[in-house]
Image (tube, rainbow, N blue to C red; front, side):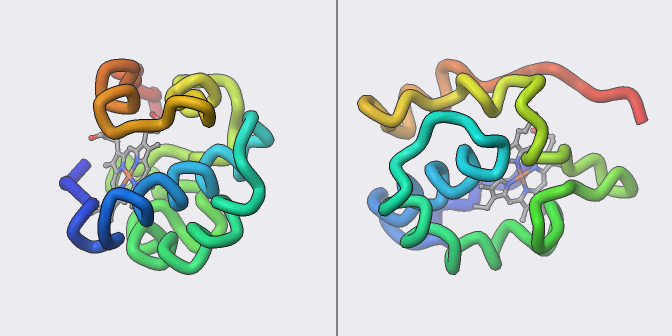
Length: 95
Ligand code: HEC
């Protein structure tokens, strides 16, 4: 996946959109941040779809299931890009 921070904004915006993505899979998230991040998801929707369901044609994973790394990828209390990166999921889906 391409680096997306520049398309989203600053560190705060990245954090907000991360909480929005967590909300898609009913993972623990900050609902205020998720609301703020929602509009920024437009930058992600090109690949992951407007509802985050993914696009197998380009290998963009479904972000709404809670079976994978997204669920535990970032802890709302300590969401930092470092944390998110270090716990990044390397799993590949067969499709
Ligand atoms: C240019 C297409 C593209 C855009 C734009 C994009 N993604 Fe992705 N994303 C991918 C692809 C392809 C993968 C899987 C391969 C990889 O991780 O590099 C992925 C993987 C992910 C994963 C890991 C999911 C999992 O279950 O493995 C997350 C989370 C994610 N993207 C979130 C986002 C967010 C949030 C944005 C917007 C800020 C975004 N993506 C924008 C293409 C994209």
